[in-house]
Figure 1 (tube, rainbow, N blue to C red):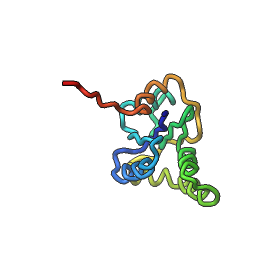
Figure 2 (tube, one colour):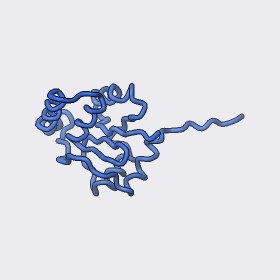
Figure 3 (cartoon, one colour):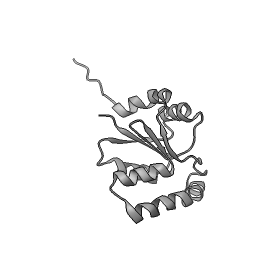
Figure 4 (cartoon, rainbow, N blue to C red):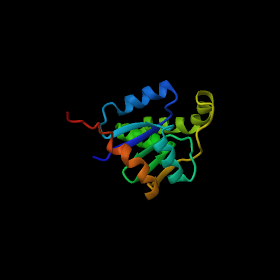
Length: 137
């Protein structure tokens, strides 16, 4: 199974709780903090920089910013006017909210991009999960 990865601000306990709530009932979705070394390497390979952004890596697609919100809403079955309202709220509120909560606004990167081959190497181990080796005695 190829898991999707939700990249979020792991430095904030509220965002950790939200990421946990989003992924708890979704075995195909794993939350990974933006600060994680593999994510930093992924961002550098994918974008040529390390944008502070809300990211969903899903299959061969990388959703960023508003596109992440839209895709997560669709995954949860939220569509129509409610989804449109939440997407607009993110679009208008992310920068001021980010400055207050994170001390910086998220990068102005939005949309869906093809997963770059060089970036894939950094996220594949996260998608597979961690295996705990069992030592025989």
